[in-house]
Image 1 (cartoon, rainbow, N blue to C red):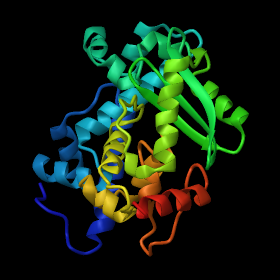
Image 2 (spheres, one colour):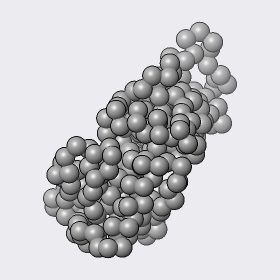
Image 3 (cartoon, helix red, strand yellow):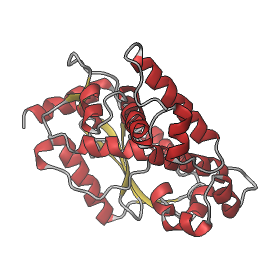
Length: 284
């Protein structure tokens, strides 16, 4: 067994080995063991573990877990699939093991996910701020969306697309106060924003989003630096994709990520909004 890869074209060789391992994990009915993956790659388990995490930002076990969650979501969307069939079809060994972490994996009970959010109650409110229209939505677990845009109707449609069968409840007076808190933070970032969040992403996305929340107001990082912060320096593209997948504006501050040269890159809610958010934060 090779203990290390040759120096020549080592980066390409590592990427190829990890890509092969990822396909192996994705094709397997049950997650292959670390030893089996390492043997297939011709590396020791410890070395393979380091190489895999450096390339993907995840351990093989976490990658397999995220892949099973993806398969589960796909299975649950099949019209005739029962929850039990979806659980075993996604490679879980037992339903009891799945149910122990089902809400964490999906953000809601599996039956509710399968039914497009049926049974979930999501409070929301639309408003206006100096950056345009804003929608704030909250599930039982916390804020699940902060959306910005020009057209309030499009923001509501975005929320409906994410939870097509959830009970969307127009905000009461108490919820309006929470929206006012979010708007106040947008207008004056120095006020801070400390709200419980209901993040719904893969293990890798959640690592990126947590790292974003640790960037102080008034500071920026580039994608390379953000990848380094989550100990995945080669996963810059995946980091950028995780930023783009964020549905909780300002509370998960993906606007604080810029290009390596300091120029502003794309932003889900428009580069001009990103520029203005950064300007306000720089002023303290």
